[in-house]
Image 1: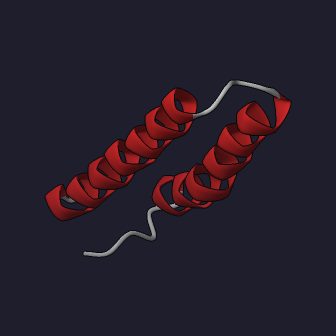
Image 2: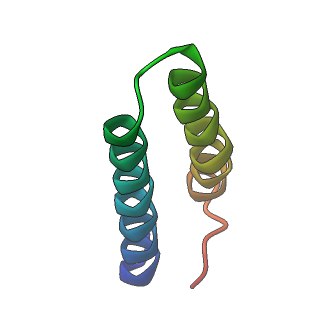
Length: 59
């Protein structure tokens, strides 16, 4: 991966982790909170994984 692609991926991961921490600290933890965190992780990171694994990232 190029440096810029790594930087974009790291920013996205940090943003997602920050939002998950915000969600976990502001509410009581129940099934819907855990489900939304897992679902958002799948929606965000699976397409990125497929994109970078196949080498179709920006040059």
